[in-house]
Image (cartoon, rainbow, N blue to C red; front, side):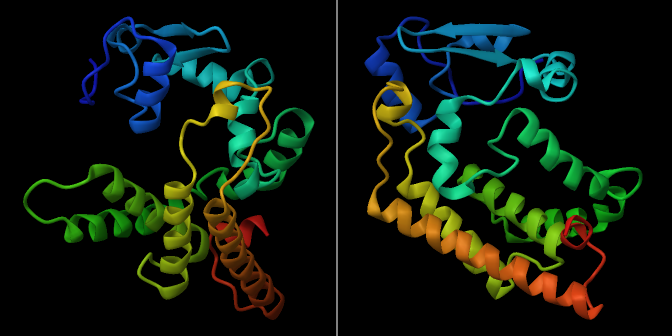
Amino acid sequence: MIPPKPGARPRKVSLWQYWKMFRRDILSAQPEHLYRAKMAEFRTPFFRSFLVNEPDLVRQVLVERPDDFPKSSRVTRGLELLLGQSVFVTNGEVWKRQRRIIDPAFEGGRLRDQFPSILAAAEATADRLEPGEVDVEAVASHATADVIFRTLFSIPIDDHVAAETYDAFRRFQRAQPVATRSGLLPWLPVRHRPATRAAAARLRGTIEDLVAARQTAIAEGTAPDDLATRIL
């Protein structure tokens, strides 16, 4: 079964056409046959990429054999300004050390303890929806951010700090294109727009403030028992 998705592109397009499609919409930029395969390869003169659809294969890539499937340098180059050397972009021993730090917060039934917060975020999303056509990407992004803030910091997305952080992230998304020339041509230097740098700095600053406040609460013994407390 293929889940609902935007229409696929023609099977054969030029690299320039593909790049323009990719900047506009990642899903629509892929040919139909990629979605029917358990695992499919896409080649260009500059890079090779793979799309994995089979759950067991996804588990192999992400869980069982992470060393054999490192994160792409194209991804890390684009996100380094925002994420630095975080677990989302690192590989190898650095990634393993970071995982050892955060994994205990998700082991056993601890993640299950966060289900009420996740449910509350889902219900809040449903309450915000109105009849008619909506931008699903924006709704899903907002809902995801709400889950993150509720489970990590015990605050809903409409809290002023969470709202400010989410707004900074959306600004970064708008300022940082999904596809760039340096991503397509890896020998080109990565250049970020001033708006991208400003959005990343603002976002990192608000997150640093959240972490600092939580560290203070932990030291004072007043921190809630959420994921941020368990990780820190």
